[in-house]
Length: 469
Image (cartoon, rainbow, N blue to C red):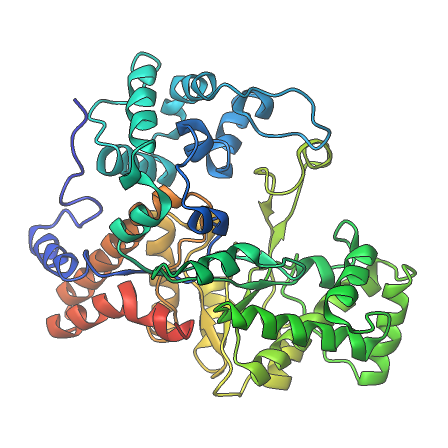
């Protein structure tokens, strides 16, 4: 039998610190979950239909899983990942699950293994290790449970004790699923997030057509700079009608610019007509980060910047399967120089919140913590993506707290597509933070009463405050 989750998971081995970590964790483990940024599908909550088979729920949409399997030679087609041209793929959920189970050992020591073990044990009551031999038994157990009414999305939302969850939609999305949720009368709070990448990145596929569509749905002239900016303002206001409190920007770099209006208009004209070169396309993205920050200053949306990922690193995979298929790779990221134009413009605004994320951990202590430790507009997002792990969370606290403190960070967000893993991810974050606080108390750098207060802030209150939820 698989051992149940150890009560001291991720806690310090030293007895006194471990005891305090237990006490801190006991005070926060049942706090509601605030999930202020993620990529779950609002259709789930709108329709409240049973989840599909175990493979479609847990494997096919999760790039953490299939990127690892692909690295060991398992083809994406074998895992049910759809191709852009409609070529045949594996559609038998049981076959996909068996292939996954055969390779489950690949996840030893990874955060994915922590999350999946938590899901299997706590959500589905599976008490034996997942292997090729146990694959069918696990599949049958999960498949049967998913047909029950108490495993539908809204019931799980409530069972997970989620107070609010934010999904992420593109600027051209009609938000019909959010409208359906709102009109249903269900009390679960699901809000959207404004993600304009498709209409601010000239390298995004279909960019020119996307701008045409933006003009059609807003009634603005997106052939002109002023009309283009007005279109963004209208879409942001529309997203706010469906609960949006933040925008999100997944740019290749953190580069910003602050051009004069005349220079920005001239640049836009070149970009709009497809005549901008690589330098000008990069400059346009940089200018648009500053424009979005100015709009956030005016309309109150919290701005999230997720830079530093070389998206779709494999052109062959991108051309066959499209975006978000595990080939987004971290790159070195400059923040001090790159953000200066934006900060010169709005960095001292006390009512603006810009949350910075990084995939370049070398920038934590050198750049990000010093920036957030002085500019009123800046906050640091938690350890993100590849660093959403116990080790990554510890490194984040160790490298940022000394300069930015705790209150220039924003708690935890799970940033996930994998709905069943949300409780596991928040549990890991709460355990790691409690262990870190216990260490500070043990080193006589923090009083115990302060540690208890901070544990609650990190688990719950900071995210609510930062994201204005």
